[in-house]
Length: 215
Image (cartoon, rainbow, N blue to C red; front, side, top):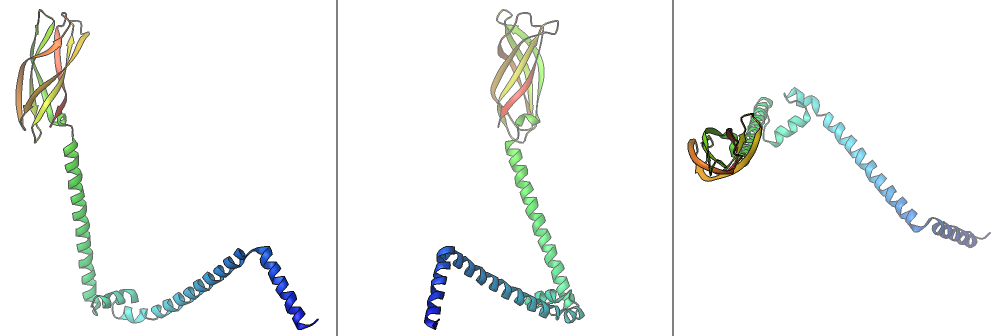
């Protein structure tokens, strides 16, 4: 067989392989070969660099540094004396810890302020029941209460819930009533003759509780 015929047969075989496997196969194979070569070169470079660095360890330790990395970091920061560098690192660590503590304190301050801003005012309020009476021919509840505001801000529009019981203790009616007034911070205010609405004429005992208030 002539050389030209062999070359022709090789071209035909190659063309058939390309058609059978597809051009994508060869593109992927080429890319894989390139990446593999790159990773191998990187691994060799890392190994050689690490060995060179490890060779510097004895001199760095003899100079008082922890290792060559510690010495290189000191030199980059302008320190050649290991003792001075250790003091510098301790000071940096102290400042970093102080910065972290200050940041946490500020975050806690903001969190506390947010909780305070959204806290239910009634958490620091008290209601004391005074006397009560029946009005409107015995069918209307008239209440006297004292509200104490222990908050650092004024409160307003306080809603109370009054429960009326018979002599037997049975609950006969419940009435919700909003006092559209204000109570100053760290102060108390009495509210008298509050008409809380219609009640059962057999009501013999009554008492109110604080439900809500606004800032």
